[in-house]
Length: 420
Image 1 (spheres, rainbow, N blue to C red):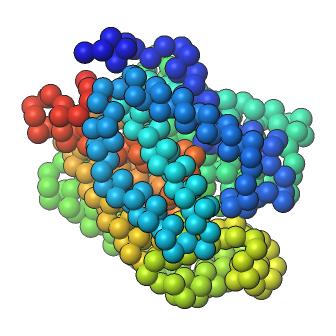
Image 2 (image 1 turned 180 degrees about the horizontal axis):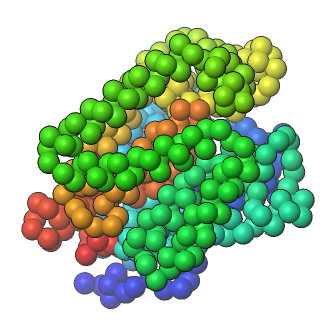
C-alpha cells in the first residue's frame, strides 16, 4: 500500500481542511459581499477563483491520500444519482452555463465531503469542525462588539452576511460541541464553552427558526438515544410517538397560526415567507416535472423573478423552503429522487444508532434531522460549497462504511479510512 495513503494527516493538510470548513460556513464573506451581490446566482469571480483552487487541491489530496478514490465515491452512489440529475438539468435549464457550473461545484463539494470522511477519524473530524466554529464564535463577538459588520436590521450578524446564517451555523455548532465533548473528553471544558457561546449567539442573532431548531434538537438527542437503543417495541413506539406529536403540532400551529406567530414575535405571514411560498408554488407548477434547471430559477434578469420581487416588495434569493426550492430547480422527479435518497440515509442512520454504542453513533441521524428542520424556512439541501452539503456527504459516507464493515466482519469493502 502507498505510504502516502497510510500516513496520518499533517498540520498543513489539517489547516487546509479547516480553511475549507470556514469558507463553507460563509465566514468573513460579509467583508467581500456587497448588498447588491446577495443573490446566490450572481457571480463573484474572486470567490469562484478561490473555490476552484481549493477544489484542485482537494482532488490532489483525495487522489493521493485516500486509497481507491474512485471506489470511495461509490460509497455515496445514491447521492451521486442526485448529482447526475442536476447535471442532466442542463438540458432544460433557463441558464445552461450556470447550471453546468453549479453542478460541477456541487459534485466537487461531494468529493470534499467524501475526502473529509475517508481521511479523518471521527475524533479528528469533530476537532476540526469544533475549531472552525470556535473561530467563528470568537470573531463574531469581536465584529459585533467593535461594530465591524454591516448591519441591515435587528439581531447580530457576527462574521456572516445575514443573521440567519449566524443563527443556523451556531445551532449546528452547538450540536458539534455536544458530540466533540463525548469523543474527546480532554477538551470537555473548551467544548462546553463553545456550546454555551453557540447558544448565546443563536439568541443574539434573533433568528427564530434557528432557536426553534436548536431547542428541538437538544430535546431529540437524549430522547432518541434512550428509545432507539432499547427493544424493537420501544424503538417503534418512540418513532411513532414523534410522528404523532409532529403531526399534532403542525395541525395545531396551522389552526392557531395567529397565536403561534404572535408568541414568536412574527406576523402571520412569517415576514413575507407565506406569500413567497405561494408565488413559488405557482411558478413551480408551470414546469412541474423537471423544473427550471439546477440553481437557475432565481435569476435577477428573469421576468418571473422580477414580478415575484415586485409583488413581495423584497428580493428573496431563494424560496426559503428546501423542498420547494428543489421543486423549482429540478422538478418533482428530481425532488422525489432527492427525498428517496434522504429517507434511505435516515433509515441507515436509525440502524446505526440502534446497533452501535459509540459516542458518535447518533451523529448521522442528528445531523440529518437538523438538515431537514433547517430547510423548513431555508434552502440548504443542495448547497454548493456549503457546510451542510459537506456534512451530509460525510454522514452518508460514514453510514456506507459502517454497513460495509458489518457485511465483511470488520474488513471494509471500501477504502480503509476514518473508522478503522
